[in-house]
Amino acid sequence: MISPGLKNTGLNAQRKFSNGIYYLFILCLLVASGCCNVRQRTNFAAPVIIPGIIRAMKTAGFWTAKIENPDKIILDAGEIQQFNLKTERELGLIVDLVKAPEVYNGKSIKNDLEKEIKSFSKGTYYTANSKPAEKGFYEMIRQNMNLSGMENQVIARYGFLSHYDNQRLLPTEMLLTKEPGDVEFDELQNSSLDLGTPLIILHETKSGSWVYTQTPSSCGWFKKEKVALCSADKFKELLSGKNFVIVTAGKADIFLDEKLTKYYDYVRMGAKFTFNETANTSVFEINIPSRDKEGKLFTQKAYVKREDANIGYLPYTQRNIIEQAFKLINSPYGWGGLNGEQDCSSYIQEVFSTVGIALPRNSAAQAKTGIPLGDFKGGSDTGEKLKIIRQQAVPGATILQMRGHIILYIGIYNNTPYVIHETHGYGEVVDSQNISWIVNRVIVSNLSLGEGSKKGSLISRIINIRLVK
Image: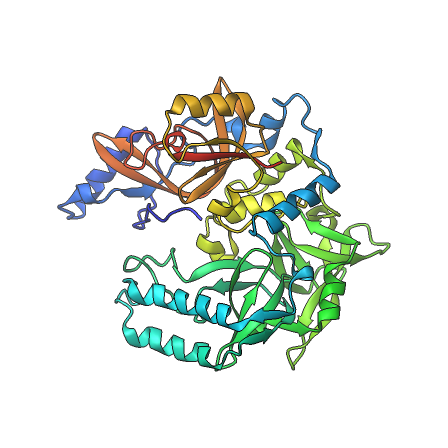
């Protein structure tokens, strides 16, 4: 996830002039409104056109047309399977739930949960009323976590999300922020997952309202009312289905009838469902997990537009990855997937999931996968980074990591490398003043974005270049 270093102060005026004129205009507004210390107001809504970008760059075709053979297979199905196995077994960054153990070490789980709440209680965090969270706040949560009731051996239980839900680091819907009122960055938000996500239940709160779970790429708490429980055999049967569709739209609506009038939920790119053959050529009939009154799983038929999904995974080609990435252009930023959106790492994860590549959840872990092209943690000049990108990076198959951020390389234009990424914002210097432009969406940019600012340009911040292969 991208570091929340750029915060939105709520000033959403559109930039209608050049940077210098626009900044002067904002200062005039602030002075006119009686604001004396105007130089402290440095966060503004970013322009629609990001610096260094022309209109045509905002479509996939502009970039795929520059690739000699954009439909060449990068990895076939067998090679993707080996890639995922390496990420799982050698790197330990994802989990194959079908092969997961049936019994877990309760002491280890308890220790992890203790560390999590202790980490928060030792820091300074603010609640929704902008006041520091007190000891009583954490003690209430700790008591509900029921850690004293955890057995030394935990027998796994199995289930699926029956609706979208937020995955929390602690079992509460209350938010914690690092700065007062900074509600866009809830530090308890770990991820958000869609209808149909498989999970293994490892613990339950005393209230019975929350369950602690393992998903394929992360651990965290879900509301129990969103989980449909099933047997181990049923769990493995559903996950092993050979006939499936993968959602390729940025968001796909799910309906309970073929006429698409009974809305149920929506899912995001990469969601996967088994399907049934039908004569209807405009929709896929899929099977979704649902929850009965006792919390047990039953499957029901549902429908998704054919244009929003694909039978099986897409071939792993540069064209497919770039086209999938651009389906989310301008999609809102969501820290930890808040509000059903995506942050920088879940954006990358969703795009690659459409070709069957299982990437870890966060940016640091994603940058451990694939083939290293350059490691710059020890420092390096931008010239060396640019040389590697120009000579070795593959558009649509290369990820560039910064501390707290990750981006997808899409190609060269006029000898300048360009990327697409989900970002909260970037810095710029205007009249010797550091300005934070709030973006909050998926954008195309070059690597000089942020040059001269406190954080520096994207190229100066790159610490790792990886080929997803």
